Amino acid sequence: MRIESESFELERYRDFFLHSPEGIWCFHLDVPISTNLPPKEQVELLLTRARLGICNDAMAKMYGYSSASEMMGLSLSQLIPSDAPEDLDHLYRFVSSGYNMKDVESRELDRFGNSKYFLNGVVGVIKDGKLEHVWGSQRDITALKQTQDQLRYSLFLQSQLTEISKSFITLPPTELDTAVRDSMEKAGRICNADRAYIIEYSNSNKYLSNTYEWCREGIPSFVEHFQKIPVGNIPPERFERIRKFGYVALNSREEIEGEDSFLRDLILPRGIRSLLIIGLRYEGKEIGFFGMDMLSEDRVWTEEEISILGLIGDLILLAFDRKKKEGTLNAFYDRMHYDLELGRLTQRSLVDRTFPDSRFFRMETYFRPFEKVGGDVISTIQNQDGSVDILFADVSGHGISSAMVSGMVVISFKNSARMGLSPAQGLSRIVEDLKPLVVDHHISAVRVKYIPESKRLLYSYAGHPPILLFRDGKRIELDGMNLPLLAFDGAQYYDQAIDLLHGDRIVFFSDGMYEIFDGQGNILDLPGLISILEEYLDAETIEDYIDQIVSDLFEYSGGNFGDDIALLVLDIY
Image (cartoon, rainbow, N blue to C red; front, side, top):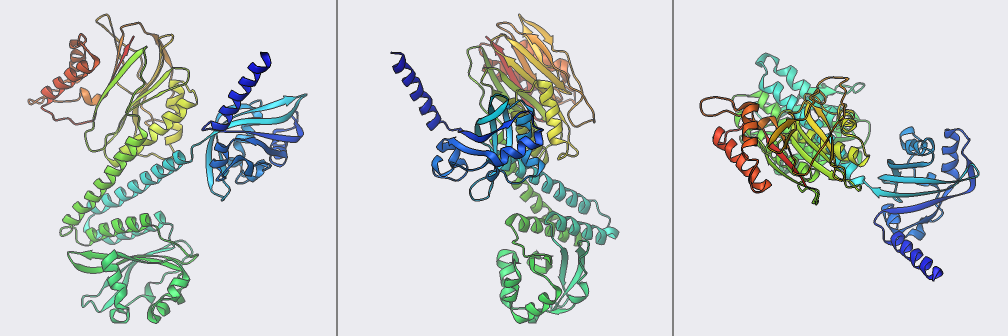
């Protein structure tokens, strides 16, 4: 019977290994590594000696293989992109952690040379002071990393476009030339081009001349070579292409060599290997072209770069004739609102909209953005030990930039929650993650960890309105305040705790709920909101409680709100 029982258990482990969605693996060391060696030497030996001896199909597919058998025998060095410190950091952490670590990120290569990002749990097998085997499991987080990168890039682009837009809107006419050149430089650096320029039609539309130019350091000026270019010498199909699609892109010297002889002789002697030309057109009239060149290498121009140049081109046209271009400016902002909608969808895909079901508690929320995209964040994550992490935050400002920052806040929160950080540590981690990327924004927040088994609530403030605890009809404000995230350098955040009881109600709210005015201009303010929160504590359900609060707010303000409205109610069972 014992043999049968052990056989049954082994079969269960085998099924788990084969069918687990996580990659499970083991690297063998034919020559074990002494744990007394310096960490650098241990890492070097791991790269050369460790060979994959066991893995499941889930792991193999993460690297582009069909089955585990195709990976057998691969050395660890074949999966690591380089010997750069950032690519070996997780190996040094493995050694320094005592050969046992969890939730550590690594960058590796699949069979096609593509970068892949994994979240790993790793444990080493030590015998007689030597490392003999390394077991581990991993999850593919490549898509999440790509989303983070796209959010960062989108935030950067939005800030640059907003800066250019503001400079043109507030620009004195005498500074037009400076503003146009500044915008060209920004566009060139955004797209990493060698040269950016504007070519305009003459009054007779018979000639084209280079009127503005920006060159990267070390790149010569070509303005004198592109003066009074006869329009009639340029193939008509090139103009038709720009009229139809808005641009012409020549991505390589080979493509330029395939052009009409006039264009070929005009471009190639300058050493240009790639170019992108955007049409400048207003009210049906062709004004000229906004272009970029590459001299150092061939270049494939992306749709995103083409779109960016189109937006900046529109802004340059605004600068040329601001009064006549008001309609174009509105069109630009319409496109920005389209981008805003895309930002909203991106944000919604990153922010949790459902909350954990539990016999220990009940959680419900209400959220109403001031604009299409709000800066408020309500996000939760339920951990394997049953605890729940909650982030209730408000990013300053509104619109695209606030939405992008909100998305980054949620990513940082979820990553830190998975790492098991305390509320205060999690707030500090948000500052660490976002400080290099975010300007002109701060974040008021409260981070909470609730442990249902002990009914213990850990929390940490960062400039957010107080959490309210209602117990037996009495109100208790949870102590704390502290400074908003990213507002001041060196701010410290602290964990506080309180033990909850059956029947307690916890209420989180944004400042937009009490910074509202009635028809006579009287502000509701915090005491007024607290009175509303207290009035409906006897509501039959948590949904009724929220509905009656929101109804009172709409009645007081007439539906006019100056900020996002966010509310979270947590009932303890």
